[in-house]
Length: 370
Ligand SMILES: [Fe+2]
Ligand SMILES: [Fe+2]
Image (cartoon, rainbow, N blue to C red):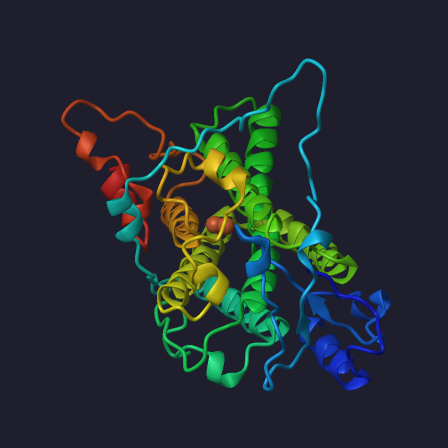
């Protein structure tokens, strides 16, 4: 179970104050949610054998308390609704799938800012990363080389599974916002201006759907408590409105911002993969760790390829696609260019059709539009 609860037994007022400072950048309402209470985070993950669910004990250097919830307390947070006539509800957007080679070929990357807009987008993402590191309680020794923040993945000390869950659940709850905002605004623009959209809306909505599937998958491994829920609520309130205004003012810069955000996502999951491979995360490095059924169904993960590492490879490949798509869309003329990712190319020009996951910096306009 992942929850923040008020309890004087498990956390001192000093820790609560640290936590308060850490989440303040995310929440304007930080004080309103009662951070004066001592707080703790509880995390548990699903494993194949109940007995293998060992405690996530606090490490001496932890800034916060991470404790265990026993297995039988972990309830399904969103069980499928049993109805008399409906057998199942498959996803509206089927996942396109990846080959193993495609997933292994994903690498962290960074597009150097070229314009003032790029620079602003990049700095905003740097600020968001700084705030996330602070909120996740990442110590100095857990930091990567900050001169290459989206490409360096080695750190002196790994994150704990609890830190990873808090980080990725929070990030995924945010990541599903921009695609929906962009898709919605382009949809409304098309309706009121009586103009074609040329294929952008579906890609943007599909991106937000895909991000939500990441969140649904991760949610199956942890139960979010009221404090985290409040953080997510506040962050969404701020982020949705920021994205809404930003997309109206400059969709180009907003796509660049999302491209940089996705660079962070690829970086985050690459680091997670590294720590799983190195055996730094005992539960997730265990090949018998049971990943959620929802993930197996959504990504159609083949038998024998259903470890936590396999799951993260799929999620990371999705993030690489978002990164390439958004950096490319940020290079296009927003009002007139068709979405090259869903377009059919003229005979003889088919090789120009972009493959989003392959180019961390995205495609330039002259490569895909002409
Ligand atoms: Fe994601
Ligand atoms: Fe993403």
